[in-house]
Image 1 (cartoon, rainbow, N blue to C red):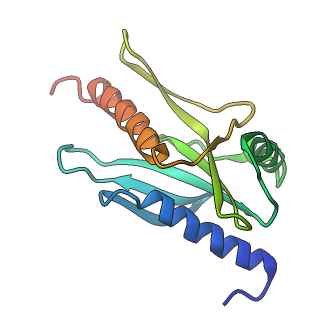
Image 2 (cartoon, one colour):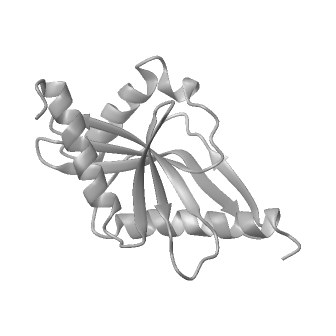
Length: 165
């Protein structure tokens, strides 16, 4: 059992993240701990022939985060704090999600640290690192939305990388 408040918050945030991310039976969550990224999430759908992973930066707080605005303020203070996390993040070649949990209320929010974007006409794919994070409240369809965005990005990337197939 954690002995400090900080350890309790960290453990609780990890548990909440795992509960949220494993709502789908195809999702596996593993520890990563590279830079500020703590988790590696992999969606192993039967119909795809590729591994589609994204990293997760996880922050927990004992403070109340009543809405997306509060969560966004908290996330951006964290993003710019602690050795300037936004600029010291290693370059990942996969999407990176930020999860923020208020352990007082078991409320969660997400934002993209490296957002998967694609241009439909050209099928080009990019990962965009925002200047500021914008948090969205986790709801019952949030994981579907995240996984769909990641899947679409990997589908487009596959067409570029494996052009001969």
